[in-house]
Image 1 (tube, one colour):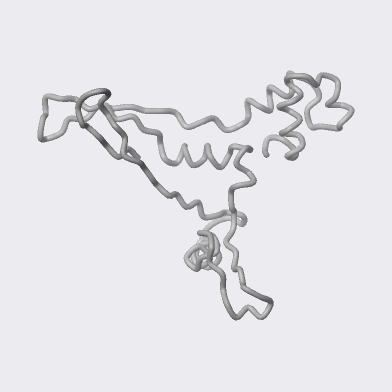
Image 2 (spheres, helix red, strand yellow):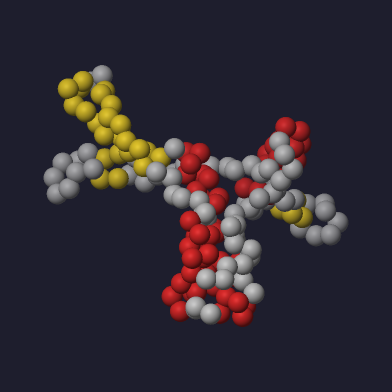
Amino acid sequence: FLPFKSEVDWRVAKWFIKDGPGFAEMLDLSFHNIRDLHARIDKLPKRANWNECTVLLKDDPTQEHLIQYRNPLDAIQSLWGNPAHTEQLVYRPEKMWSDLSKDSRLYNEMWTGDWWWKLQVNEISKYTILGATVSPVILSTDKTQLTLFSGSKQAYPV
């Protein structure tokens, strides 16, 4: 929830802008007026910017194709920095067991698998600062119709 002190700070900030002048002091929040709140909001990570370029393909070098994209690292930082995602993000691997005897492992999410444990606990910890985490990225797409009403051009954008 940075730059806010807590989730309460974050949730009250949203309300505070609309209806709450005077309540920040009463609730002992980390911001005390609208100006301070806006300064904190301005410190929130921004969404990744859209970039674009044109490419020419060998099969028809006379036709330019517009490519729109975001820098993947900026997009990941934007997702991780958004307080709205805090409860859905997982920061460390976890070994889950079917019972206290630990005879049978449970695998039900990406972070319960062996690869994340091996990578983060055994490998990354040798080379990074304390508190670093693996940030897996799963790319997925659906077929998108590129032409409307006529034509059959489709693509699988990522």
